Image 1 (cartoon, helix red, strand yellow):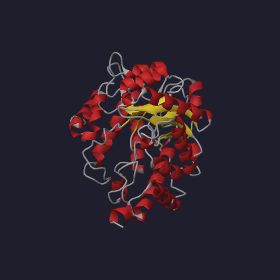
Image 2 (tube, one colour; image 1 turned 90 degrees about the vertical axis):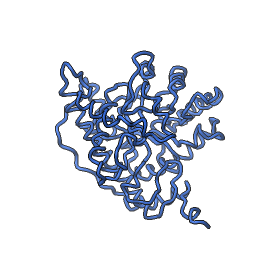
Image 3 (cartoon, helix red, strand yellow; image 1 turned 45 degrees about the vertical axis):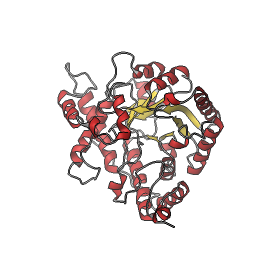
Image 4 (cartoon, helix red, strand yellow; image 1 turned 30 degrees about the horizontal axis):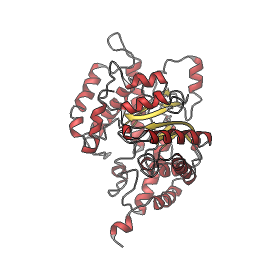
Amino acid sequence: MSHHESNHVSRRQFIERVATGSAAVATAPVLQRATAAAQPQTATKAIQAEIEKTRSYNPQMEYRRLGKTGLWVSAVSMGGHWKRVDKIIRSTAAFAGCETMGEASQSDMTAFAKNRADTISACIEHGINSIDFAGAMEPIAYGNALKGRREKVYIHWSMGGQELRHKDHRKAEILVEWFEKGLKETGLQYADCWRLMAYERGGLHTQQEVDEMVKALEIAKKKGLCRFTGFSTHDRKWAKMLIETYPDVMQMCCFPYTAQSKQLPEDSFLDALVKMDVGAFGIKPFASNAIFQGDGSPDGPHAEKDSRTARQTIRYILTNPAITAPIPGLASVEQVQNMALAIRERREQDLSQAGAEVPAGRLDPSTQAELDAATASMWEKLEPHHRFLKDWEYV
């Protein structure tokens, strides 16, 4: 047996190894509540009372309504894969993807399981109550990390390449079968939202495949496997068609939205989202890390500057009320803390200290200029397979 064959982690091995690693971190540490003062969002008493009933509510977190689902989710969602987690846990070059795990030793798997459990604990403590899955391995990893606290978060389920991107799975019954099997394997019981992952260029799907997609979502909801339904794609025109043609099924969607994305003044996809009351998650807010100078190492020379750029990016994205929440890849407790700080900065600076020249919720000119400088070379730094993000500069 080759070295690669002996160390490659299959889906089944991953389930076993994560479960083994999770046993050591069943009681994950939680963080002390932040005590810095924050200005609450303006809301009627009735709406505020409703928000306070949401899962893992924290008064210092901002919550936004996920469209017609009626769920109040945190203004930052966990998900976005776990890129650069190897820099956090000091592992070998594993954990790069979410469909397969590459090579990983048992010690790496144990460290990875602890990292996921600790990071989720930090999210819950800071009021981040939303987790979006985007690959075959993510439901397994988070299912183990969430044991005993499933009802602390809203789960938006996808098994990535096992769904519409798999040519043999584009039948409603097969899609539902994979979904049901995944729920049983992970012990998560149900998903709050099942959002099917389509082609990046969703318009390549045939009408027959779209029909099967819609049928699968309807079946899953009737069976009680999920409460709400939606999709993800990188194709704006196709996404707009789906939400306008199937308004009762397409209740939420995921699409790219970065530090340099801007809403078109006319005929914007975001206008359609608002009109159809669709919850919207912005994926790849950091443009697959192209906005950063460092490599993700927490003690690297660029770590402090990159953390500041990350906060400014999240604050910028949240200036658009059509976006429910961006989904940064949170790889550590410290990154969760940084996102909580971004929300506090948004409340204390962008919302509370606005004047006539800077409307409430907007970045002040100096902060915007700093973010623009940090992301000036973002498009040029994109890897070839992420160059499609440039298509989302104007949404």
